[in-house]
Image (cartoon, rainbow, N blue to C red):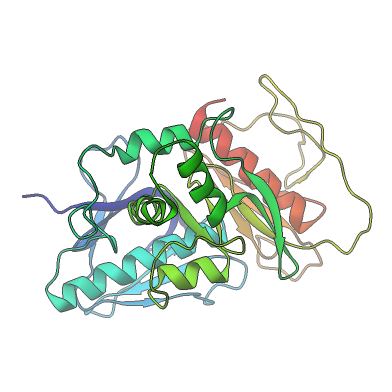
Length: 322
């Protein structure tokens, strides 16, 4: 029986022979991590056993790269991976930590609550329910919420989820809604955002999902991101573009020739902390696009917020093709 796939997606990996960072399709299994050059490849380029391995996050071995984590095997081999943003890195870290813990305890990897342990009715189709929740007209409304001087974009509160389940007649009462919402969370259909909801998921609360207006959650492919609250008093109204343009604006690009295009199909985009050539510079808000044929482009936004918005927009483009 093949090991269960826990999580998969593109990450940027540092080469073991050369100090180059390349996009890899990474698959977390119950007993190890496989990485492929492309998602469509049949055989992995390498495999990292998790038994006896240790995890370091955040890893600050590389000053100019953000959201890096390190896996050290029993043979003292270091493997470095970079996520595109903080929440993505944290999601990988949570699952890798749990996989290592399950191996040490001789247990099978499972989300906190399974269908059997919480007695979830067989008639409940979590996948179909998730699609209903994401419906733009009748589903759970995604909002920009503020807490602790941070703005959480494209997310919703725990009590809004329970409200929706009850009003949609998916459950009979709020307690049953809490069971269903916990199942959606533990199966990966919902993700925690913010300290309160993350603490509950980590096991310090009685229930992994909180029916609480201060507990924030988001859909994993919604484009969620968190940003520090701006000190500006002005409210910037954004025009919503439709059609083939999903975002436009001015960026600084490394290189002498500013003209051209970047193919986003199969690319990976990540934040970069400093000048890519390693020289000291006052440049900030850099991000890197690595194309499918491993061409690296470095771009600079005007503000941290704008950089995050560009990264999210690019991710939507290469994931959806729209």
